[in-house]
Amino acid sequence: MAESIIIRVQSPDGVKRITATKRETAATFLKKVAKEFGFQNNGFSVYINRNKTGEITASSNKSLNLLKIKHGDLLFLFPSSLAGPSSEMETSAPPGFKVFGAPNVVEDEIDQYLSKQDGKIYRSRDPQLCRHGPLGKCVHCVPLEPFDEDYLNHLEPPVKHMSFHAYIRKLTGGADKGKFVALENISCKIKSGCEGHLPWPNGICTKCQPSAITLNRQKYRHVDNIMFENHTVADRFLDFWRKTGNQHFGYLYGRYTEHKDIPLGIRAEVAAIYEPPQIGTQNSLELLEDPKAEVVDEIAAKLGLRKVGWIFTDLVSEDTRKGTVRYSRNKDTYFLSSEECITAGDFQNKHPNMCRLSPDGHFGSKFVTAVATGGPDNQVHFEGYQVSNQCMALVRDECLLPCKDAPELGYAKESSSEQYVPDVFYKDVDKFGNEITQLARPLPVEYLIIDITTTFPKDPVYTFSISQNPFPIENRDVLGETQDFHSLATYLSQNTSSVFLDTISDFHLLLFLVTNEVMPLQDSISLLLEAVRTRNEELAQTWKRSEQWATIEQLCSTVGVQLPGLHEYGAVGGSTHTATAAMWACQHCTFMNQPGTGHCEMCSLPRT
Image 1 (cartoon, rainbow, N blue to C red):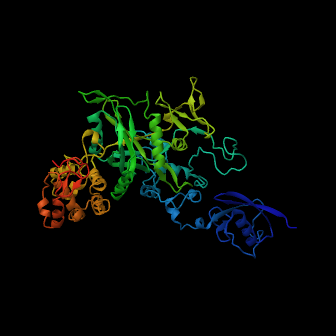
Image 2 (cartoon, rainbow, N blue to C red):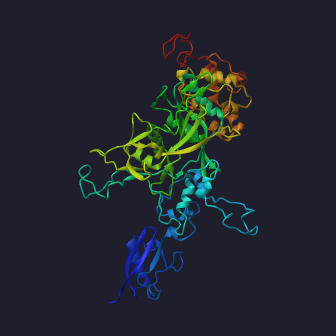
Image 3 (cartoon, rainbow, N blue to C red):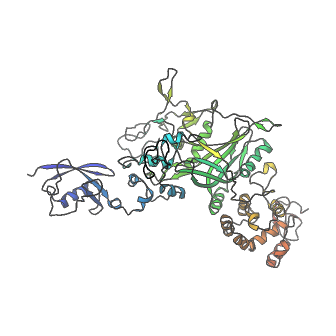
């Protein structure tokens, strides 16, 4: 009987041992490999060397002994999709993630762009330290990797968190190029399908039990900077607090772009703030159900925008004569309360970061949190944050609770008969300087927070036009600012610009045109949205000549405000004007009534 030998075969899934004989043919050996790894006969390639040289073909004439394969040798298996260099994944994803990731996931445009960039930090020749010619390189001028901590610490201001794409480059660096590294999301739930015991709370085993979590400060962040396009966007949001003294909430709409101050960094540019229905007091906020949420996201997408974060105020006036506010969020109190961390974690879970390097197809989130609060100089400052992926997992699996009397502390739930909660720990330093591990009951929330710089550009950017008499913002009825056709007519009469695109390019005005109850234009406004997105005045003028805009102008004229230029349009849309001129709008509920009626058909109130 021929002597048996064991040959190791390494694949992206791990190493397996194949029992064979020296006289065994290569074809027979490859059939054993295919059976062991679960491949079809032509679904893989086996090489003698790691660099894909010395391929073993399915030959019935060559034995393993002839191929000089001995007992204990290590061979390298590559699936067919990885065997050749001509793969779409090759250009945009690190090689080590091809098998473990989800290749069918479509990433954001900014992620696709950054994954193709070099990312290295190039340095010029140092005249004092470099002793070589102009074409040479040494340790003083060789390019640095984007995750170089010493470089990041010496920036002004220092950068505590590397960018997410720099973190990926760090994982895929080294000799093995991160072959067996995968971005896995944390799970705090019991794995389902374990049949060896009764379900929880009557049984649990090491196979289905989630691992304990030790909280660490996250070394990377998905977004490196928040930038408001101009001061007007933020000032209009703050006007609510200035007029009422109550706190306010809003969603940030904008886009993700490259942040060039940090290697492979991402910036969230804010173009508009949408204010959903809410109840605000001086020290609390309550969000109400928003029936228009999906429509707002749809309109924003047609404008080339997306929801990139949320913003809220935490402002208390200190001296009304000086216009100063109280400096309440600092290192001696807290930067984000536990309730705010849980809310941020919930928002980030609802807006995951699509990532094909993760088996789940998503990893972390680019959804940011902005806080308008008092700064050290007692003026209004904007601070940006995210919560870590560990916090997202604790919030998603309902393992984290806020502390009622201490906003700077959270509390990890204890296991109950309804839910198993893994142990959560964090590391601290005791009074003797020793590092100790503490149970997260309670938990300092600074372990969960990632700070993000928030800025305004030197040269303001205007996605939407700025007016001295802007259109009212939605859901501000408590201020007496309502969105109706009277406010629309007033806005149009005060903005008499000859460029129609400048007049109509207002985020809140566009939302009103789509969501108003009298004449919603959701099905016929795509051309106008495209004109605003591309800044195309010709497209805007084409939409202005439509029947929909003629009807809007007539509705505005019925509320007693004469629009400039309305008579000029009469020659084009005369039939529409004639049909609607006799109708009248109720001054109380704005319902359009048929001619000849003295009372409103909707609210039954008199016409005058």
